[in-house]
Length: 259
Image (cartoon, rainbow, N blue to C red; front, top):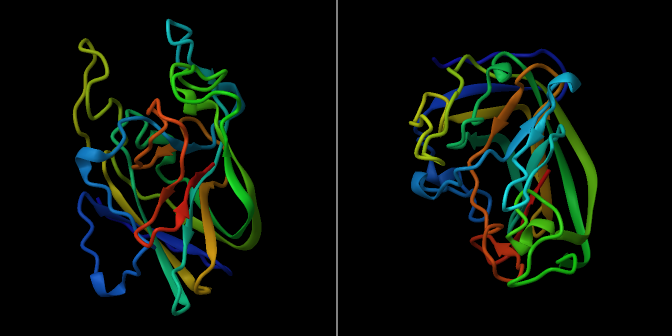
């Protein structure tokens, strides 16, 4: 089912369900401002933004041989990106895609209001702090201790608020109840309607971004609720046992995810 819900007010946006395929116009794309991930390369995890009421936050993971896990917390999620040299750009929409995890689209997300915030990002001596663990060592904390990158963090980044968009109501799409691919041989799995689903956030007022500057967006839920979460399609190198390093966009400029 495809739906668009409008919200009256300043700096508002609407959300449209685009289904499993996104037919974009290549002439409107600016190199470095989009990243298409082939379905087979989408991470199978549940890296999500959520706003769950306090009584339903639980322990994530297990304390088994890997020693991984953490107590759930609410979080927004986003991406740092770079506007290339040359011309300023006008951003009138943001298109995102759900993941392959069992939490790709939780039932509490349907009909919930989302917000999107944009920042300008400035850096001074930007670097990755490996937190004392590097290649071949175990992380001191994080979701999976066997990977040294799980306790890394970035230093030297600063975010200045630009604007916020409110009012996007997530459309009626069947939520996910199982992962798209098996994690254990005994569990049910398979692609569902909520997996790998594109949705378009259309801004009522386009945002002007200046050439040769770095920005970021964050998306999240306005209010808490039961099972209110969406996991996005991502790629990640956190499960590599190499020393930490930044990834770059199509123009060779550093980018990173934030939450």
